[in-house]
Amino acid sequence: MGEVTTSFRDHITTVTEDGKKRKWIYPKLIKGKLYRYRNYFGWALLALLFSGPFIKVNGEQLILLNIIERKFAFFGVIFSPHDFYLFVLGMLIFVVFIVLFTVVFGRVWCGWACPQTIFMEIVFRRIERWIEGNAQQQKKLDESPLSLEKLGKKTLKHSIFIFISFLISNIFLAYIIGSDSLITIISEPVSQHVAGFISICLFTAVFYLVFARMRELVCIVACPYGRLQGVLLDNHSMIVAYDYKRGEPRGKRKRNSPLFDPASQVATGDCVDCDLCVQVCPTGIDIRNGTQLECINCTLCIDACDMVMKKINRPQRLIGFMSEDQIASRNTFKPGKRLYSYAAVLLVMISVLAVLLVRRTDIETTVLRAGGTIYQLRDDGTVSNLYNAEFVNNTNQPIAFQIKPAEDGTRIQFIRQENRVEKGASTKMTFFVIRPQKAIKAYKSDIELDVISEGVLLDKIETTFIAPPNF
Image 1: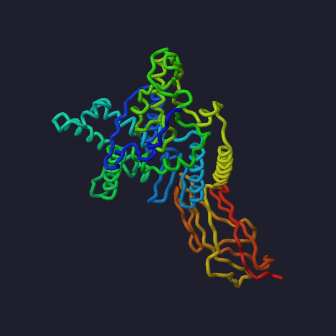
Image 2: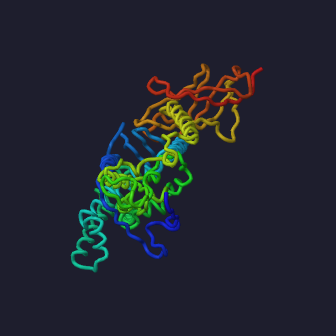
Image 3: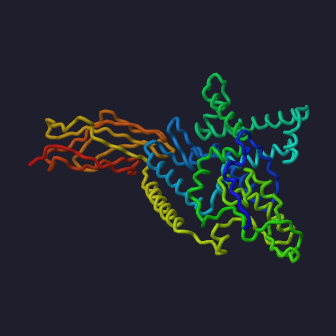
């Protein structure tokens, strides 16, 4: 492979070696096949992101994460704080999926689906190139003294950046408070929604800072997933990698030139050391140095290298999706044991979540005996227990309901009664369950209560009834 240095691991690519100054990156644009595929995928995700808050399913927002009011909706299904266990399980499934995905494909999420990358590469850099020109022209403009042209271009660019950041902040807020609430904030006077206006301004400032100044530092320094990648990858992971077996030793080559130079008696590799893979990288790394923390698997270096290989009539994918094991041993891709382990865990967790969702009823009922109370003996020969009940509506419609005892001879006397619960809301009731003492054979027994709506059984409740036995 030739002489290999590891100095690139001593510092991040966006800072000078003395660590005192930021190195601004001006990635070159090469429109290859993967670049076009990534653009198509990115535009589709952007369309989904911007339309998501305004798409209604069963009268609810497609995705709603209203932490303030503790209301969540996914594809028309409402989840309340009582469903927190489902949320925890869903988050665990998401984490295991990310781990599994990273073990197999590395950091492809970062380069192809992460909102930070999509907005940066498809929106903000595109506007930057439109106003300031290509990478060389941008660098020349930044290094030039202040002039009317430079002031005009910078003012126009950052004004558009602020406007787009404002739009993104509104969409982001719509996912939190809901699109209807956002439209209300926009349409009504600012004085009536000071908190909402301040939130939009803060989000705008954050997004502008991220996309105008921080950029790749978010992926390299701030993102925890980038740090996690280092402990998840192994020699079987499919990542964007340089085939050093085929590419080394590097050297200038002409079209159709042989891989062995008879004059120098030295074998040459396919890499022509053109540095295009470095020039197009949005994080400024040299992929030929090996797997690096800063690589987001954006595949831009693959397109650049393929273009050069095509010009010199050599096979493409000198840089491509490969595992270290494939490069070193020339074997085909074989999943490791970790992959099967994570996949098995993920399958079990998804199965459990599916069962819980299927068993989830329209009304979730919790009935508990009132604390600090025991049974009450009545003059008519009956025994009563006092209960508190909470009913949670998991549907998108208000529900009228009744609660009735399933056992003949048992009746309910309400202290606080509710017969209706609004969509996504909850209500509470307090009532006595009364049973004939002669029918009681044990101090503690189980009873069943039915929750019925329009003749349909919504839920069956089991609780405990205590009373002195009748022997």
